[in-house]
Length: 422
Ligand SMILES: *Cc1c(COP(=O)(O)O)cnc(C)c1O
Image (cartoon, rainbow, N blue to C red; front, side, top):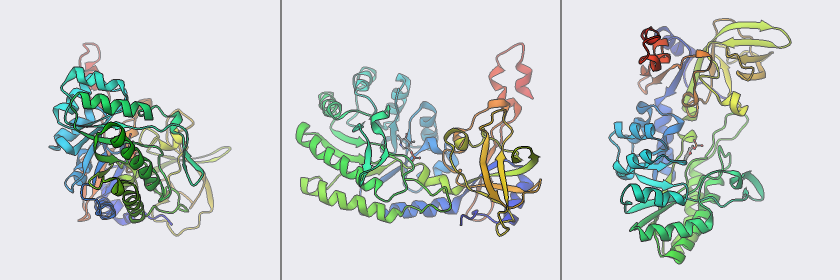
């Protein structure tokens, strides 16, 4: 059974101060999970998690991680601004972008971040912008299908990312000519994986590539970046990944492939997003409408603008009706938002307890790829983000948008600038 990380009573305290909807984050859960991740990779002295900022680009939350040793994985100019605002630079920043504008490369380089190229043509492109730094990385895409034990996990051959095998060999040689001395390799081959074998299987592929690259080019490989992709159990019947087993599986591949090749000083990096924060965030909403037609609808004060995954991927997000955790799930509802878009439905034909207007409807696992994918369709405003601190207090970490924010891009306009003041 999936349980909220906060009691109904506590949540009602928060709602007195901050009206729904809002995203709520569990500081204690975030910190404990990070400690487990660090324990799982403690065998590797150079290990570092670079939190994928795009998952939850709130500097307060990113700081919880970077205060505890993490770096950041950025892929855009504004994500780099978050890194800079947290005082990060150098090896604490991984810049894993694609279709990269020149000004983004220039900014990443000015912060001395590690640039992870997505495409071979970016090498010459960047070398025209600045002298390439001593340490650089390339993103690998093996093509074909990514399989574990003959089971297809994902389809890298259909993905826009990364260098082919031939390109990464040529790319390393090119980078060495530009004076690059230390190399990383990176790959992200499957998303939201629910098996302890994803990282170990990926690691083995990248370790073999690292050995081959060292032999063919003489490059010094200083890190292997396993990127993101470790999943979480969105559905109550799904099993949680065991991060200790995952770390152990990567260690086993390291001992088997890298150590015999004399590469026992390679650092392991990760760029987890979902695994770091998704379970430790929830979208807190109120039921404001009920409608009976061909289906039984419950309308919330939140909509897909606050959480897009169900509309975009048909993703499952578990729902708890606060205070009715033990009531029988004897009603079948479609739980919707108010966008003029029929895909704005958080759940379809979901068995839930009877929902009354005013009930708090708690949508689980929104801590990553939740708020961050939000948008303003239908003029809907983005919600606040609140941290439930480890001392069990509530801290505003982003205020809700107001109409003035929505209209702020008319502040230049003589005709409509008054909208931007309302
Ligand atoms: C999105 C992304 C991640 C994080 O992915 P999760 O599925 O949230 O773990 C890491 N690295 C890169 C380059 C990404 O694009």
